[in-house]
Structures are given as structure tokens and as C-alpha cells.
Length: 137
Image (cartoon, rainbow, N blue to C red; front, side, top):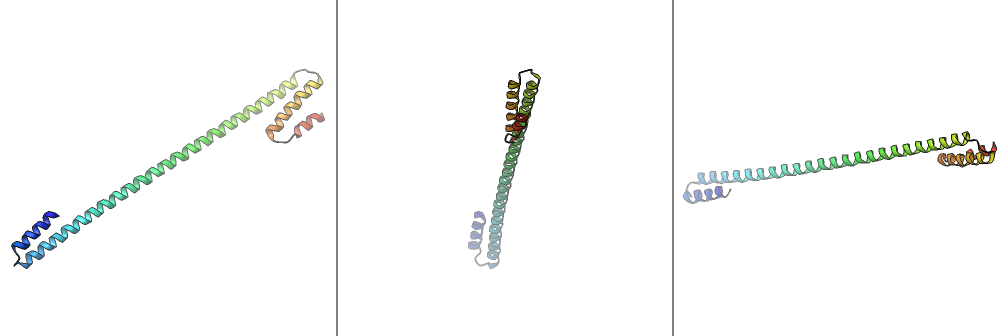
């Protein structure tokens, strides 16, 4: 761009009598300046668009990764809770079966059944209705 301006100045001084040459040189300089400005603007716009696209892609990837991690953690916690609950039910059933199978005197057997019923009631959140049924027997 500076070369074009210098050329215009030289042509202007060398041929100041020729108005057509000066007009052509001014037009060329204006065209060169406009082209340079347009190129710079286009490059800046393209760079901004690329940066925005990269930022959006990174944010989307991070959000997807976080969502996947949260879902996996929730699934693992639910599976662990289900396994623990199933194990607790198995333990209670085994205790009830053993208590029924062991030949004990009436009071000791009844105490084991009441304790087992209390554990079942607590696990089910029933507030003691199972114990009442055992005590009624």
C-alpha cells in the first residue's frame, strides 16, 4: 500500500500537467486501499467465526461429558442400592427361616421372630404392623 502511495506521488510530481494520469493513479490507490481493507475485514471475520465455532464445540463436548458422567454415577449408585437392598432382604429371609427351623423353646423362638419382624418392618417402613401380627400368634 505504501508503494502504491509513493508511486502515485512520483507520477503526480512527474506529470503534473497530465490530469488523466493523476486521476488513474488516485483511482488505483483507492482500489488498492479498498482491497486491503476488505481483505483485512474478511480475515478478521473468518478468525472470529473460527474462534466462536471452536468455543461452542468445546462447550458442547464438556457438557456432553459431564452429562454422561452424571448419568453413569447415578446408574452405579442405583445399582449399588438395589444390590444392598436385595442382600438385606436375603439376610432377613435367612434369619426368619433359621429362626423357624431351629428348635427352641417358645419364648426364645418368639423373641427371634419378633426381632426379625421388627427388622422387616423397619426395612419396609410399615411402622410395626408386622410385629403386631407375630405377637398376636
